[in-house]
Image (tube, rainbow over all chains, first blue to last red; front, side, top):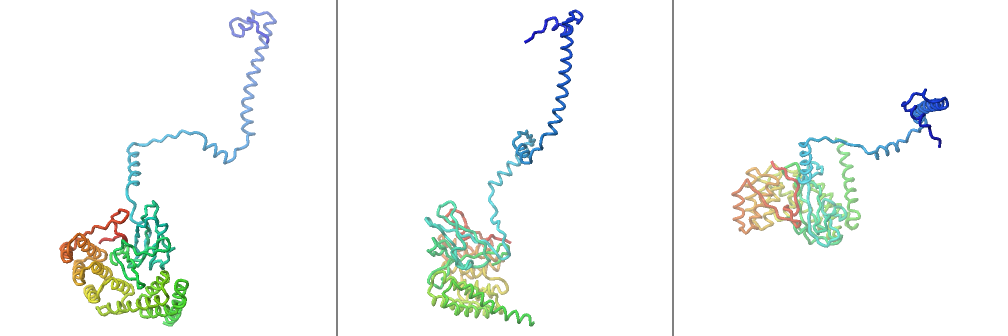
Length: 205
Length: 221
Protein backbone atom coordinates (compact mmCIF):
# COMPACT_ATOMS: atom_id res chain seq x y z
CA UNK A 1 0.00 0.00 0.00
CA UNK A 2 1.27 3.40 -0.90
CA UNK A 3 0.76 6.33 1.55
CA UNK A 4 0.19 9.90 0.50
CA UNK A 5 2.57 12.53 1.61
CA UNK A 6 0.93 14.55 4.42
CA UNK A 7 1.57 17.76 2.52
CA UNK A 8 -0.39 16.44 -0.43
CA UNK A 9 -3.21 15.60 1.97
CA UNK A 10 -3.27 19.12 3.31
CA UNK A 11 -3.33 20.57 -0.23
CA UNK A 12 -6.17 18.23 -1.29
CA UNK A 13 -8.04 19.26 1.83
CA UNK A 14 -7.55 22.89 0.90
CA UNK A 15 -5.48 23.66 3.97
CA UNK A 16 -2.45 24.75 2.00
CA UNK A 17 -1.99 26.23 -1.49
CA UNK A 18 -0.61 24.06 -4.27
CA UNK A 19 2.22 26.47 -4.80
CA UNK A 20 3.69 25.44 -1.48
CA UNK A 21 4.53 22.01 -2.90
CA UNK A 22 7.52 21.06 -4.93
CA UNK A 23 7.06 20.04 -8.55
CA UNK A 24 6.89 16.27 -7.93
CA UNK A 25 4.26 16.57 -5.26
CA UNK A 26 2.31 19.11 -7.34
CA UNK A 27 2.14 16.56 -10.20
CA UNK A 28 0.96 13.94 -7.79
CA UNK A 29 -1.85 16.27 -6.72
CA UNK A 30 -2.80 16.90 -10.34
CA UNK A 31 -2.95 13.13 -11.05
CA UNK A 32 -5.11 12.62 -8.04
CA UNK A 33 -7.45 15.38 -9.19
CA UNK A 34 -7.70 13.82 -12.65
CA UNK A 35 -8.38 10.38 -11.14
CA UNK A 36 -11.07 11.78 -8.89
CA UNK A 37 -12.72 13.60 -11.80
CA UNK A 38 -12.58 10.47 -13.95
CA UNK A 39 -14.04 8.34 -11.15
CA UNK A 40 -16.93 10.71 -10.58
CA UNK A 41 -17.67 10.89 -14.30
CA UNK A 42 -17.59 7.09 -14.87
CA UNK A 43 -19.79 6.42 -11.83
CA UNK A 44 -22.44 8.78 -13.07
CA UNK A 45 -22.43 7.27 -16.60
CA UNK A 46 -22.53 3.67 -15.34
CA UNK A 47 -25.47 4.41 -13.06
CA UNK A 48 -27.69 5.80 -15.79
CA UNK A 49 -26.69 3.19 -18.36
CA UNK A 50 -27.16 0.34 -15.97
CA UNK A 51 -30.61 1.42 -15.02
CA UNK A 52 -31.71 1.87 -18.61
CA UNK A 53 -30.19 -1.38 -19.86
CA UNK A 54 -31.56 -3.36 -16.95
CA UNK A 55 -35.02 -2.09 -17.67
CA UNK A 56 -34.67 -2.96 -21.37
CA UNK A 57 -33.15 -6.39 -20.98
CA UNK A 58 -35.25 -7.69 -18.05
CA UNK A 59 -38.00 -10.09 -19.33
CA UNK A 60 -41.56 -9.21 -18.35
CA UNK A 61 -42.68 -11.39 -15.41
CA UNK A 62 -45.46 -13.91 -16.00
CA UNK A 63 -49.01 -13.06 -14.90
CA UNK A 64 -48.99 -15.77 -12.25
CA UNK A 65 -45.68 -14.54 -10.92
CA UNK A 66 -46.99 -10.99 -10.74
CA UNK A 67 -50.17 -12.21 -9.05
CA UNK A 68 -48.21 -14.24 -6.50
CA UNK A 69 -45.96 -11.28 -5.92
CA UNK A 70 -49.02 -9.08 -5.40
CA UNK A 71 -50.44 -11.61 -2.97
CA UNK A 72 -47.34 -12.01 -0.84
CA UNK A 73 -46.27 -8.41 -0.80
CA UNK A 74 -47.29 -6.88 2.49
CA UNK A 75 -49.60 -3.90 2.14
CA UNK A 76 -51.02 -1.55 4.65
CA UNK A 77 -54.82 -1.37 4.69
CA UNK A 78 -56.39 1.53 6.42
CA UNK A 79 -60.06 1.01 7.37
CA UNK A 80 -61.88 4.03 8.58
CA UNK A 81 -65.20 3.10 10.23
CA UNK A 82 -67.49 5.26 12.28
CA UNK A 83 -68.30 3.66 15.64
CA UNK A 84 -72.03 3.99 14.91
CA UNK A 85 -71.69 1.85 11.77
CA UNK A 86 -69.57 -0.71 13.62
CA UNK A 87 -72.25 -1.10 16.27
CA UNK A 88 -74.99 -1.40 13.64
CA UNK A 89 -73.03 -4.13 11.82
CA UNK A 90 -72.46 -6.05 15.06
CA UNK A 91 -76.16 -5.78 15.95
CA UNK A 92 -77.13 -7.06 12.51
CA UNK A 93 -74.84 -10.08 12.76
CA UNK A 94 -76.14 -10.85 16.25
CA UNK A 95 -79.74 -10.65 15.08
CA UNK A 96 -79.03 -12.97 12.13
CA UNK A 97 -77.56 -15.53 14.52
CA UNK A 98 -80.25 -15.34 17.20
CA UNK A 99 -83.48 -14.81 15.29
CA UNK A 100 -85.32 -17.99 14.22
CA UNK A 101 -85.32 -18.97 10.57
CA UNK A 102 -88.50 -18.43 8.59
CA UNK A 103 -91.04 -21.25 8.94
CA UNK A 104 -90.58 -22.39 5.42
CA UNK A 105 -88.13 -21.47 2.71
CA UNK A 106 -89.53 -24.02 0.33
CA UNK A 107 -91.30 -22.64 -2.69
CA UNK A 108 -94.88 -23.88 -2.45
CA UNK A 109 -97.32 -23.98 -5.29
CA UNK A 110 -100.99 -23.18 -4.99
CA UNK A 111 -102.83 -25.90 -3.10
CA UNK A 112 -99.73 -27.27 -1.39
CA UNK A 113 -98.67 -27.27 2.23
CA UNK A 114 -95.94 -28.67 4.44
CA UNK A 115 -96.33 -31.73 6.64
CA UNK A 116 -93.74 -32.17 9.35
CA UNK A 117 -93.27 -35.77 10.42
CA UNK A 118 -91.64 -36.35 13.79
CA UNK A 119 -91.21 -39.69 15.53
CA UNK A 120 -89.12 -41.16 18.31
CA UNK A 121 -87.45 -44.46 17.49
CA UNK A 122 -84.35 -44.90 19.71
CA UNK A 123 -81.88 -47.37 18.29
CA UNK A 124 -83.35 -47.37 14.81
CA UNK A 125 -80.94 -47.33 11.91
CA UNK A 126 -83.37 -45.88 9.40
CA UNK A 127 -86.88 -44.46 9.44
CA UNK A 128 -88.97 -43.62 6.39
CA UNK A 129 -92.48 -42.27 5.99
CA UNK A 130 -94.67 -43.96 3.41
CA UNK A 131 -98.12 -43.02 2.30
CA UNK A 132 -100.48 -42.22 -0.48
CA UNK A 133 -98.23 -39.27 -1.38
CA UNK A 134 -95.21 -41.41 -2.34
CA UNK A 135 -96.85 -44.61 -3.56
CA UNK A 136 -96.00 -46.31 -0.24
CA UNK A 137 -92.35 -46.68 -1.26
CA UNK A 138 -90.02 -46.80 1.77
CA UNK A 139 -87.10 -45.50 -0.27
CA UNK A 140 -88.87 -42.30 -1.22
CA UNK A 141 -88.99 -40.19 1.93
CA UNK A 142 -86.48 -40.87 4.67
CA UNK A 143 -86.54 -39.18 8.05
CA UNK A 144 -83.29 -37.91 9.54
CA UNK A 145 -81.80 -37.98 13.01
CA UNK A 146 -78.78 -35.69 12.71
CA UNK A 147 -77.97 -35.55 16.43
CA UNK A 148 -78.57 -39.28 17.03
CA UNK A 149 -80.98 -38.75 19.90
CA UNK A 150 -83.59 -41.12 18.51
CA UNK A 151 -85.92 -38.34 17.34
CA UNK A 152 -86.39 -38.59 13.60
CA UNK A 153 -87.96 -35.92 11.43
CA UNK A 154 -88.70 -34.76 7.91
CA UNK A 155 -90.66 -31.95 6.29
CA UNK A 156 -92.51 -32.85 3.14
CA UNK A 157 -94.38 -30.67 0.67
CA UNK A 158 -97.75 -32.30 -0.03
CA UNK A 159 -100.95 -31.40 -1.79
CA UNK A 160 -103.53 -30.00 0.61
CA UNK A 161 -105.94 -32.56 1.99
CA UNK A 162 -105.94 -35.76 4.00
CA UNK A 163 -103.07 -38.22 3.54
CA UNK A 164 -102.74 -41.68 5.06
CA UNK A 165 -99.26 -42.71 6.14
CA UNK A 166 -97.12 -45.05 8.25
CA UNK A 167 -93.50 -45.18 9.36
CA UNK A 168 -91.16 -47.92 8.18
CA UNK A 169 -88.40 -48.58 10.72
CA UNK A 170 -85.18 -50.28 9.61
CA UNK A 171 -86.81 -51.12 6.31
CA UNK A 172 -89.10 -53.80 7.70
CA UNK A 173 -91.27 -52.69 10.62
CA UNK A 174 -94.40 -50.84 9.51
CA UNK A 175 -95.73 -48.72 12.37
CA UNK A 176 -98.58 -46.22 12.53
CA UNK A 177 -97.47 -42.88 13.96
CA UNK A 178 -98.05 -43.26 17.71
CA UNK A 179 -98.35 -39.49 18.08
CA UNK A 180 -100.80 -38.92 15.25
CA UNK A 181 -104.12 -37.29 16.06
CA UNK A 182 -106.08 -39.19 13.44
CA UNK A 183 -106.25 -42.81 12.35
CA UNK A 184 -108.26 -44.86 9.87
CA UNK A 185 -108.59 -48.56 9.23
CA UNK A 186 -106.35 -49.50 6.31
CA UNK A 187 -108.71 -52.28 5.07
CA UNK A 188 -105.88 -54.76 5.56
CA UNK A 189 -106.41 -55.33 9.28
CA UNK A 190 -104.29 -52.46 10.58
CA UNK A 191 -104.49 -48.71 11.04
CA UNK A 192 -102.96 -45.89 9.05
CA UNK A 193 -102.25 -42.47 10.54
CA UNK A 194 -103.82 -39.47 8.84
CA UNK A 195 -102.31 -36.04 8.37
CA UNK A 196 -104.43 -33.08 7.27
CA UNK A 197 -102.36 -30.70 5.19
CA UNK A 198 -103.62 -27.16 4.93
CA UNK A 199 -102.86 -25.14 1.80
CA UNK A 200 -100.21 -22.55 2.50
CA UNK A 201 -102.06 -19.64 0.94
CA UNK A 202 -105.72 -20.58 1.15
CA UNK A 203 -107.58 -20.61 4.45
CA UNK A 204 -110.01 -23.37 3.52
CA UNK A 205 -109.25 -27.05 3.18
CA UNK B 1 -116.48 -31.37 -31.12
CA UNK B 2 -114.86 -34.08 -33.21
CA UNK B 3 -111.52 -33.21 -31.71
CA UNK B 4 -112.93 -33.55 -28.20
CA UNK B 5 -114.42 -36.93 -29.04
CA UNK B 6 -111.14 -38.05 -30.52
CA UNK B 7 -109.23 -36.92 -27.43
CA UNK B 8 -111.73 -38.69 -25.19
CA UNK B 9 -111.37 -41.91 -27.16
CA UNK B 10 -107.60 -41.67 -26.94
CA UNK B 11 -107.48 -40.64 -23.30
CA UNK B 12 -109.37 -43.59 -21.92
CA UNK B 13 -107.02 -46.34 -23.19
CA UNK B 14 -104.02 -44.18 -22.31
CA UNK B 15 -105.30 -43.81 -18.75
CA UNK B 16 -105.85 -47.56 -18.54
CA UNK B 17 -102.33 -48.17 -19.76
CA UNK B 18 -101.01 -45.68 -17.21
CA UNK B 19 -102.80 -47.46 -14.34
CA UNK B 20 -101.49 -50.85 -15.36
CA UNK B 21 -97.98 -49.46 -15.72
CA UNK B 22 -98.15 -48.05 -12.21
CA UNK B 23 -99.43 -51.30 -10.75
CA UNK B 24 -96.88 -53.53 -12.44
CA UNK B 25 -94.18 -54.66 -10.05
CA UNK B 26 -96.09 -53.24 -7.08
CA UNK B 27 -99.16 -55.45 -7.10
CA UNK B 28 -99.31 -59.20 -7.83
CA UNK B 29 -99.68 -59.54 -11.58
CA UNK B 30 -102.71 -61.83 -11.42
CA UNK B 31 -104.93 -59.13 -9.85
CA UNK B 32 -103.89 -56.19 -12.00
CA UNK B 33 -106.66 -56.68 -14.62
CA UNK B 34 -109.35 -56.81 -11.93
CA UNK B 35 -108.01 -53.74 -10.14
CA UNK B 36 -107.63 -51.91 -13.41
CA UNK B 37 -111.24 -52.65 -14.23
CA UNK B 38 -112.38 -51.30 -10.86
CA UNK B 39 -110.29 -48.17 -11.32
CA UNK B 40 -111.76 -47.55 -14.78
CA UNK B 41 -115.25 -47.98 -13.35
CA UNK B 42 -114.54 -45.36 -10.68
CA UNK B 43 -113.15 -42.96 -13.26
CA UNK B 44 -116.20 -43.43 -15.45
CA UNK B 45 -118.40 -42.51 -12.48
CA UNK B 46 -116.30 -39.37 -11.79
CA UNK B 47 -115.12 -40.78 -8.50
CA UNK B 48 -111.54 -40.19 -7.25
CA UNK B 49 -110.09 -43.29 -8.90
CA UNK B 50 -106.57 -42.46 -7.75
CA UNK B 51 -107.59 -43.56 -4.24
CA UNK B 52 -108.22 -47.07 -5.56
CA UNK B 53 -104.83 -47.16 -7.25
CA UNK B 54 -103.25 -46.07 -3.99
CA UNK B 55 -105.15 -48.69 -2.00
CA UNK B 56 -103.87 -51.41 -4.32
CA UNK B 57 -100.29 -50.14 -4.20
CA UNK B 58 -100.55 -49.92 -0.41
CA UNK B 59 -101.63 -53.55 -0.25
CA UNK B 60 -98.73 -54.59 -2.46
CA UNK B 61 -96.23 -52.64 -0.36
CA UNK B 62 -97.60 -54.27 2.80
CA UNK B 63 -97.31 -57.72 1.18
CA UNK B 64 -101.03 -58.40 1.52
CA UNK B 65 -102.41 -61.51 -0.18
CA UNK B 66 -103.63 -60.73 -3.71
CA UNK B 67 -107.27 -61.63 -3.06
CA UNK B 68 -107.41 -59.22 -0.08
CA UNK B 69 -106.08 -56.41 -2.23
CA UNK B 70 -108.94 -56.91 -4.66
CA UNK B 71 -111.43 -56.99 -1.79
CA UNK B 72 -110.02 -53.78 -0.32
CA UNK B 73 -110.19 -51.97 -3.66
CA UNK B 74 -113.74 -53.17 -4.22
CA UNK B 75 -114.79 -52.05 -0.72
CA UNK B 76 -113.22 -48.66 -1.28
CA UNK B 77 -115.07 -48.25 -4.56
CA UNK B 78 -118.33 -48.90 -2.72
CA UNK B 79 -117.32 -46.43 0.01
CA UNK B 80 -116.61 -43.73 -2.55
CA UNK B 81 -119.99 -44.30 -4.15
CA UNK B 82 -121.63 -44.05 -0.74
CA UNK B 83 -119.81 -40.80 0.04
CA UNK B 84 -120.79 -39.30 -3.31
CA UNK B 85 -124.41 -40.32 -2.78
CA UNK B 86 -124.44 -38.75 0.67
CA UNK B 87 -123.32 -35.44 -0.78
CA UNK B 88 -125.97 -35.64 -3.47
CA UNK B 89 -128.66 -36.66 -1.00
CA UNK B 90 -127.62 -33.81 1.28
CA UNK B 91 -128.41 -31.31 -1.41
CA UNK B 92 -125.34 -31.24 -3.64
CA UNK B 93 -126.14 -31.36 -7.29
CA UNK B 94 -123.97 -33.76 -9.26
CA UNK B 95 -121.24 -33.74 -10.24
CA UNK B 96 -119.71 -33.28 -6.78
CA UNK B 97 -115.97 -32.83 -6.84
CA UNK B 98 -113.72 -35.84 -6.53
CA UNK B 99 -111.72 -34.06 -3.83
CA UNK B 100 -114.77 -33.58 -1.63
CA UNK B 101 -115.84 -37.18 -2.14
CA UNK B 102 -112.35 -38.31 -1.10
CA UNK B 103 -112.40 -36.09 1.98
CA UNK B 104 -115.83 -37.26 3.03
CA UNK B 105 -114.78 -40.87 2.49
CA UNK B 106 -111.88 -40.38 4.91
CA UNK B 107 -114.15 -38.68 7.44
CA UNK B 108 -116.66 -41.53 7.18
CA UNK B 109 -113.88 -44.04 7.80
CA UNK B 110 -113.00 -42.04 10.89
CA UNK B 111 -116.50 -42.45 12.28
CA UNK B 112 -118.64 -39.65 10.87
CA UNK B 113 -122.27 -40.80 10.64
CA UNK B 114 -124.43 -40.23 7.54
CA UNK B 115 -127.00 -38.02 9.36
CA UNK B 116 -124.17 -35.80 10.56
CA UNK B 117 -122.90 -35.52 7.00
CA UNK B 118 -126.35 -34.47 5.90
CA UNK B 119 -126.48 -31.76 8.58
CA UNK B 120 -123.11 -30.36 7.54
CA UNK B 121 -123.96 -30.36 3.84
CA UNK B 122 -127.25 -28.64 4.55
CA UNK B 123 -125.66 -26.01 6.77
CA UNK B 124 -122.77 -25.30 4.38
CA UNK B 125 -124.38 -25.82 0.99
CA UNK B 126 -122.06 -23.96 -1.34
CA UNK B 127 -118.55 -24.01 0.01
CA UNK B 128 -115.72 -26.39 0.93
CA UNK B 129 -116.74 -28.58 3.85
CA UNK B 130 -113.59 -30.60 4.30
CA UNK B 131 -112.53 -28.87 7.50
CA UNK B 132 -116.01 -29.20 9.00
CA UNK B 133 -116.12 -32.92 8.20
CA UNK B 134 -112.72 -33.51 9.79
CA UNK B 135 -113.41 -31.27 12.80
CA UNK B 136 -116.55 -33.23 13.65
CA UNK B 137 -114.72 -36.50 12.97
CA UNK B 138 -111.94 -35.37 15.35
CA UNK B 139 -114.51 -34.88 18.11
CA UNK B 140 -116.32 -38.14 17.37
CA UNK B 141 -112.99 -39.94 17.43
CA UNK B 142 -112.49 -38.71 21.00
CA UNK B 143 -115.87 -39.92 22.18
CA UNK B 144 -118.11 -36.88 21.69
CA UNK B 145 -121.53 -37.79 20.36
CA UNK B 146 -122.26 -36.95 16.75
CA UNK B 147 -125.01 -34.39 17.29
CA UNK B 148 -123.18 -32.42 19.99
CA UNK B 149 -120.00 -32.38 17.94
CA UNK B 150 -121.86 -31.17 14.86
CA UNK B 151 -123.66 -28.53 16.96
CA UNK B 152 -120.35 -27.05 18.12
CA UNK B 153 -118.67 -27.02 14.70
CA UNK B 154 -121.71 -25.65 12.90
CA UNK B 155 -122.07 -22.95 15.57
CA UNK B 156 -118.46 -21.96 14.92
CA UNK B 157 -119.08 -21.99 11.17
CA UNK B 158 -122.13 -19.76 11.61
CA UNK B 159 -119.83 -17.22 13.32
CA UNK B 160 -117.60 -17.16 10.28
CA UNK B 161 -114.89 -19.62 11.25
CA UNK B 162 -113.58 -21.68 8.36
CA UNK B 163 -110.72 -23.98 7.44
CA UNK B 164 -108.19 -24.63 10.14
CA UNK B 165 -110.07 -22.40 12.58
CA UNK B 166 -112.75 -25.09 12.70
CA UNK B 167 -110.08 -27.70 13.42
CA UNK B 168 -108.83 -25.45 16.24
CA UNK B 169 -112.31 -25.45 17.76
CA UNK B 170 -112.29 -29.24 17.81
CA UNK B 171 -108.76 -29.25 19.23
CA UNK B 172 -109.85 -26.93 22.02
CA UNK B 173 -112.78 -29.16 23.00
CA UNK B 174 -110.46 -32.18 23.04
CA UNK B 175 -107.99 -30.32 25.24
CA UNK B 176 -110.78 -29.38 27.63
CA UNK B 177 -111.78 -33.03 27.77
CA UNK B 178 -108.19 -34.11 28.41
CA UNK B 179 -107.88 -31.54 31.20
CA UNK B 180 -110.58 -33.39 33.14
CA UNK B 181 -113.88 -31.84 32.07
CA UNK B 182 -116.83 -33.97 31.02
CA UNK B 183 -118.03 -34.08 27.41
CA UNK B 184 -120.92 -31.67 27.90
CA UNK B 185 -118.86 -29.28 29.99
CA UNK B 186 -115.99 -29.30 27.48
CA UNK B 187 -118.32 -28.47 24.59
CA UNK B 188 -120.05 -25.79 26.63
CA UNK B 189 -116.76 -24.16 27.60
CA UNK B 190 -115.57 -23.95 24.01
CA UNK B 191 -118.95 -22.77 22.75
CA UNK B 192 -118.92 -19.92 25.26
CA UNK B 193 -115.52 -18.80 23.93
CA UNK B 194 -116.52 -18.70 20.28
CA UNK B 195 -115.39 -17.26 17.99
CA UNK B 196 -112.13 -16.62 19.89
CA UNK B 197 -110.57 -20.03 20.46
CA UNK B 198 -106.91 -20.66 21.16
CA UNK B 199 -105.30 -24.04 21.56
CA UNK B 200 -102.15 -25.21 23.30
CA UNK B 201 -100.38 -27.81 21.26
CA UNK B 202 -99.21 -31.13 22.60
CA UNK B 203 -95.42 -31.29 23.08
CA UNK B 204 -93.66 -33.67 20.75
CA UNK B 205 -90.84 -36.07 21.78
CA UNK B 206 -88.15 -33.55 20.97
CA UNK B 207 -89.69 -31.13 23.44
CA UNK B 208 -90.97 -28.66 20.88
CA UNK B 209 -94.47 -27.34 21.38
CA UNK B 210 -95.93 -28.42 18.08
CA UNK B 211 -98.46 -30.91 16.93
CA UNK B 212 -97.08 -34.42 16.54
CA UNK B 213 -97.77 -34.08 12.87
CA UNK B 214 -97.69 -30.40 12.28
CA UNK B 215 -99.89 -28.98 9.62
CA UNK B 216 -99.00 -26.52 6.93
CA UNK B 217 -98.26 -22.88 7.64
CA UNK B 218 -101.38 -21.11 8.73
CA UNK B 219 -103.00 -18.34 6.80
CA UNK B 220 -105.20 -16.57 9.25
CA UNK B 221 -107.78 -14.12 7.95
